[in-house]
Amino acid sequence: MSVQLLRRLFTVDQYYKMLEAGVLKENERVELIRGEIVKMSPIGIHHAACVDRINELFFLRLAKTVTVRIQNPVRLNDNSEPEPDIALLQRRPDFYRTQHPQPEDVFLLIEVSDTTVKYDQEVKIPLYAENNIVEVWLV
Image (cartoon, rainbow, N blue to C red; front, side, top):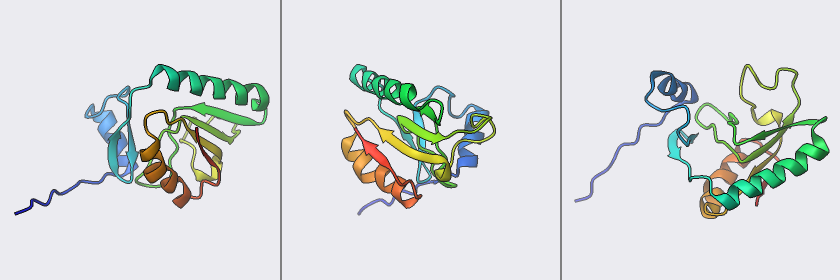
C-alpha cells in the first residue's frame, strides 16, 4: 500500500508572513517556487567568483542604464519568488524599495549553475518562461 503525502502550497504573501512570524529566518537560503519553499544550495567558492565576475562586467558597462541585482527576489506571480543569481532590471528611482521586481521589469536573469544545472533546466528556466521572462542565461 502506498501513502499519498499532501503538500501545502504557499502564496508569496503567506511566505512573507512566515518570515515576519519567525517561522523562516531572514538569512535562511530558501526561495518560493510554485508555492513550495525550496532550500537553495550553499554558495560555493567558484559560484561566488562567477557571480562576482559577471556582476562586475555588467555593472561597469551598464550601470547607468539598468539596475544590476545580485541574488535578490523577483516576484514572478502569486506563488513564485525565486532569487536568480543576477538580474538586469529596468532602472527605477526607488531601486525597487516598495516591491520586488516583476516580470515586466526584467531584461535578463542569470542562473550560475555549478551544482544545480538539472534543477535550473527543469524547474527554474521553464518557470521563468511561463512568466514571460524573455531572456534567461544558464552559466
